[in-house]
Length: 419
Image 1 (cartoon, rainbow, N blue to C red):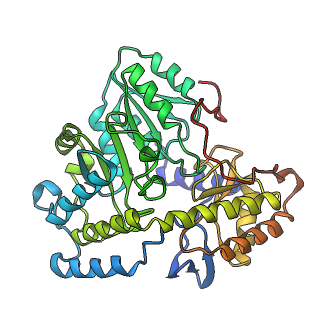
Image 2: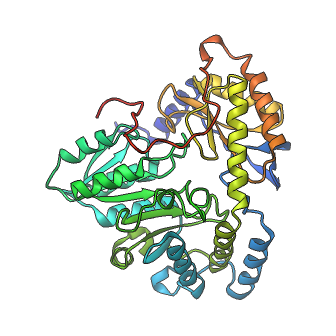
Image 3: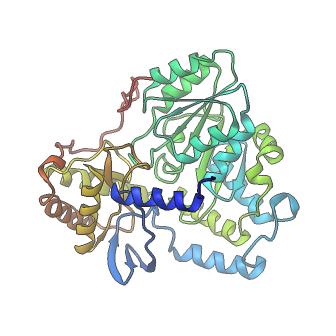
């Protein structure tokens, strides 16, 4: 007798509930600056990836409305079937200029961009080596590509080298997040670029959470590391985080982009982004590049948060980005802490397995230009107050007071097994 698939799904859901791992959709009724209304409750939002505060920016709204009056609200077709408009072409050119690449190609989401580029580059007999904490889309992309897939200890360049050396004759892609979405730390990109050159591998960086935030004009973690297109031939970035809109792109050489137009299934077989959204995104890029005060404000908030957490003995993971994870460990305790913060007026969801490794549940505090230092101070007080009621075995050690840059002179040891 065949298993009942829906019953099996229900059983898995019940097991997740018993383990305090059940996810729940919550509807946001309104957004007002740094405040959101969730199921009728007004909360200060510390969950959004709108790091530069552009999602509600008047200039983006006005541009979107004007472009929608011209183009309508959708592209109506895939890029190759008439959906590619001048707004898309101009946005791709702007993204290429910003990131210092020859060309850029738009995708509907970051997930689709990663699936498309990895499957276009790799197949049976090839090798993909990734950081153990890479985004799920990169992991799924390697699995779907049908290549040999290996993972290295988080941030450990020596571990990455060992994995590349297991298949010395295979065509190889070395892939990493630029900024890790749940930890907030930054990959050792210079060392990985050196390793890729030495092992004749192609380096790909998913800079979803670095774009707009890092680098002199917000061009991301790759730019901050001083790496060129030759160093990082494949760069993926998203438009729905620091830029406040939606979509994604892959940037690199003309050969890369021309090849993706032919072979990236997630580009070929999907409707193009709305042209009006592409127009608004170009405005977001201009603001991100030229309004450096936004990144300055973010850096001040990060320093304020980390200094305040240190003073209150709240343990954080090492991060100098707007992603500031608060260590908890136990999933039930993380949920309880999140609920207590909501009662105090703060929206800080608990992050639990499988999004993070087992035993590493946390609160992911995301800072934004929309926040003031007073908002951060109130959150710190609420964290300290709520944390005091947690069981003793969830207590966490002291964290450094300043968000110093990560070392690049040597490889960083990860938390996983030796690979």
